[in-house]
Image (cartoon, rainbow, N blue to C red; front, side, top):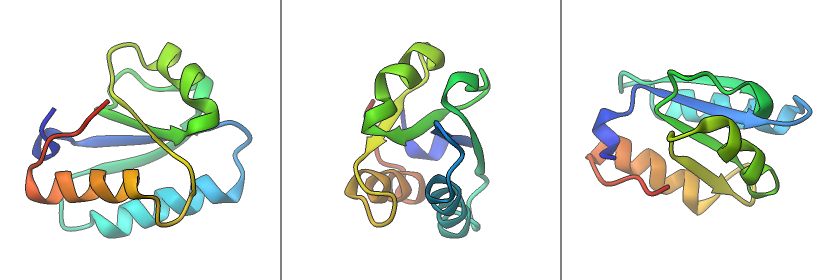
Length: 99
């Protein structure tokens, strides 16, 4: 999937802790000039209209089960993770987004 085609990112978490909410806020700020919606949702309630799901590696399997064919991007750290940085760059520059 090309990053320019992404219109909705879902940050999927487990407990609704502040870290994933902060990540969603950072993505909104980083992508404010792009036509991209960033939502925060429980990992077991991923909406079907998401273009890409971002979740912690510890939740990857649950996210993949709930996401179906939607690409799932996993990260290790909530702030400054290279996988999230690559996603932002792909959206801004039109690069490929890996699953």
